[in-house]
Length: 619
Image (cartoon, rainbow, N blue to C red; front, side, top):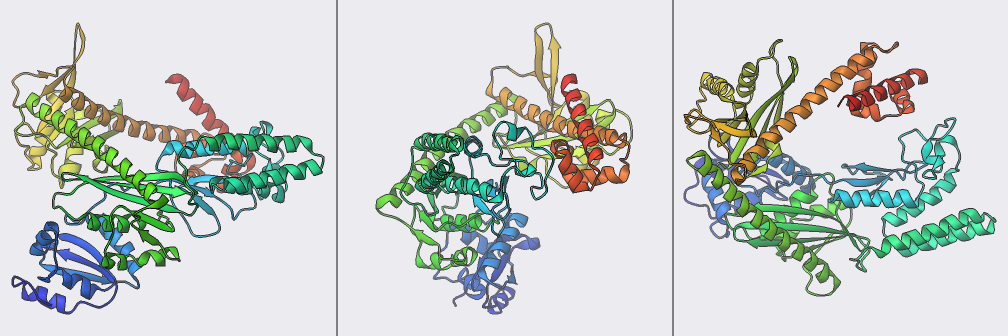
């Protein structure tokens, strides 16, 4: 191994003692800053390769290695374990030299409880091993809703949360309108229900021919039993299914799970598009948009995306992954963990012809269109931020703009919110909400001071911080920052307030640097952005305030019910997690989950329903 001359003796010793085993490595700079987190099947070979003269490296990696002062390693049992640990550490430290795909959403799946006597569908974001079936992911909520609506129209599947192993006296209204077979009341046998559920499974798996054969066999069976009414119902179901399937305009002959992943670029911007093909149809997608200032190779970015996406607990590996760029043999060897996770081989292909090429081109076309739209939107946002700079006489365009808002009713349940927009769009990872801690009394100035002290004691101020209020609120905020030795830069903190005159409401900006309030021109792009940020802070605060107030009022109402004391009140909230979930539960579910008498559970349900209707009328 040829080391760079600049390596310290400490670093050379670390490299010499690296273990030849799978694990995770942390590259650290000065003051123990985590610069980069990686994983490898062989820590010794992988980490040493960063410091070899013969190894070509991207500008990003060269910058990183120049700043490395020490290396820490964590040995794992397998490469898959190393990948999972790497993903956890990347989310924890967010190292500056890792390529971070910030779309951290976990997409919903449809779970079919196949292990139960009476299988039901539910929406989940966690895929657990076992006999239950999972379909998805559904990146488009509309597609998920359409799927559930189609199933509800076609198949009378139970949708409640009752314990179907127990029998109740009479079924609910879903049975009366022919939307359920009534397993809760013992009105259908497990075998009959399972035959209907088998049709749902075939429908979700896209096995259209098998589904029709299954239904034709059911129709013939009912006809043989002289049950012509049920035979007619099945015939209508076959017609409805054909109508629904005719609406599927994009369909492929491949019926094994396939993901197509395309990467396109324009200048420093990268767009990655993942299309999930299940049973020959596009069932979901994921889009990631990142900046690539150091010019990392597309192959390296694709490899990083594969590792981050499929290492998530909810990610299901398909049989094939189609890639817009071919990977060399070394990266392909580093993806052996996929086989370990899936339990069988995963094929990574760069197709040149045939149907796989058509599928991949569909992903590429969608990626290009999404990137064009993103770039146009980015340019518009940058122009708006420049307009904010000109309007407010700022020294530079504010990349980050935050807003603090207070919400209370008198002195009851006071809360506050902080929202932050980065490059003109909300960054919800930076949103914060606060329950005001100080004693009784309505004092917006003390509330503002408390929020600023609690949050900005160890966090930097955004480029522009808006305070919802006029000059008194602004002065209270500046004084609070000064007490913390966090004096704001000129034009960094401003107040945003309404002013009423004969013509109506006018929005104005107040700042220590402005001798008079600045009226915001109503048709200017900067005005629209500033008001949107203020309104978002208000929405975030008032939503939190209503949640706290409703929970407090509901808990007090629960304590008024005979038989409910503090212990049972806590048990109810803990069992259901929130007032909304408790209100949505049936009396049977409340009774079962909290071991309460049926009559008491019914009283709880009635109380919450009456309270909810009263709230709607008063609003």
